Length: 381
Image 1 (cartoon, rainbow, N blue to C red):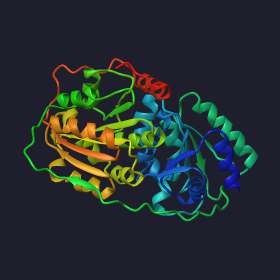
Image 2: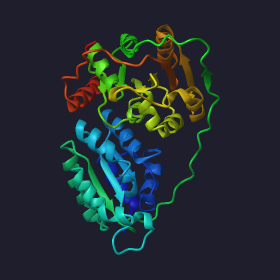
Image 3: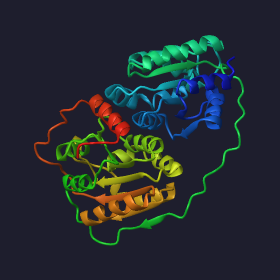
């Protein structure tokens, strides 16, 4: 067995001090170490954890993701369309529940057989974590070599690898009384392009704008392409989790997350995580057209959802319904002054700009440019 604290300190000395993930009994001692001695963000699912880690990476950190192998299925989408496409590396630990020949619960049987094959299919480098501390330390250095090539590396962890690490008492974060501003007038229903132009007009050298996948990122790119913009492709629903990891890791920057109703509905659990960790430098804007615009305009169920009540209940400090572009602009300006975790809900009209092009810059170039911007703090506006 590995001395968990000694192994964790070795990781810390190598720069790995930001952890996120979803618990597993095989990994509980490493998770306890991360909570006790490092920065740890508990995610509601493994895909969100990968997105949170990716946001931390954009800010310059070396993130670690922890998950059960059953949750590896939740992580497939970001691994193949976020981490692979943007060349975002991270260090992962995935348990081997259902290892062939070892009794386990029936739901782990198939995943135990295919865990490593699934990693291979996703072109994720991996190794079984050794139970010998000296060999495990060497494995960390091997993992770092892969990570330095902008690729994820996963340790597959068998039962009984980590020695006991007692979890210290965790302090609960009491929810504050949120400020809610409900719908109280008719909606102007501007076009998405107009809303994005309003948001873009208020950006500065201290602002990062993260645009959800689909037409949102493409239209923002066409309005003005700057180093502080991140255009998501794939990984639908992950944009606010990227924003969370980035906002927690780069507290001197204003992080604006621009979301869509279909994407947000896909991963609503992220709202609870955002609200709990409550970064004051994050503004979450929902442009809601009640449609999957990029795939032909099929309706979403957003008309039945009260996002103001939900985000307030999840712990957002402010949840505000904005009815028009003027209110959108004034709300963003107010947030820049007050800095509270804020959610803005704006109903927009369906449809997008005609003859909309795709960004000419590659996703990994967007990532590299943003990391440089966050490091230098300057951008051509």
